[in-house]
Image (cartoon, rainbow, N blue to C red; front, top):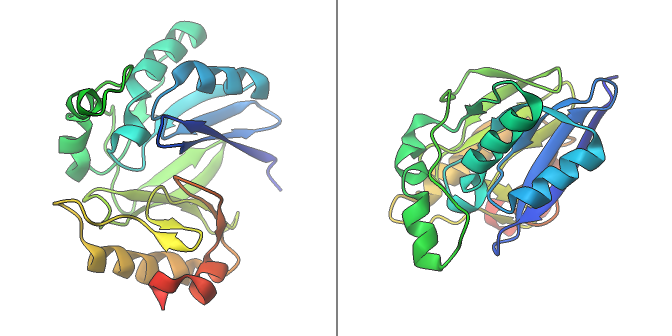
Length: 218
């Protein structure tokens, strides 16, 4: 079995879970959703002994992507190699290009617009710490929200699609509650009750537990 390690770093006043996933043997890994507080993320990478191969974004909200550009610059200087930003789906481009303006409205410093080196889409496959993860388009919270899932590993990173006991907000002008529930019930839950997941806020869970007890899925 692969020796994958995972850690979460709570960043920004929104307490967003920036995820670090790496191979314990090689030290190679990724950072998912670096929303801000880049020095804190860098310190966690140092503790893990992780060399970052890429930065992944599940969606374009500022608390998930506001630190991506700064982290990319820092890592490339430290590692001496390109560290690409990949994802989300192109339909979130308007959100990524509005991060700095929105951060100013909230009075938040240190957040910048992000421009991915590669947009991702449904059907793509990602290598995360040497393991293949499927890319699933799960809109509703944002138009271009993605989930990264590995059935063989029984593990997924779901961003703000699904939480323990709740689901992502859809009260934005571009939100779509029906699309969100359809993505959860049609794409995530069929992957199996034993699938564990990390989410964008709060503790993780399993798809089975949420299928049984999440009030939004009944």
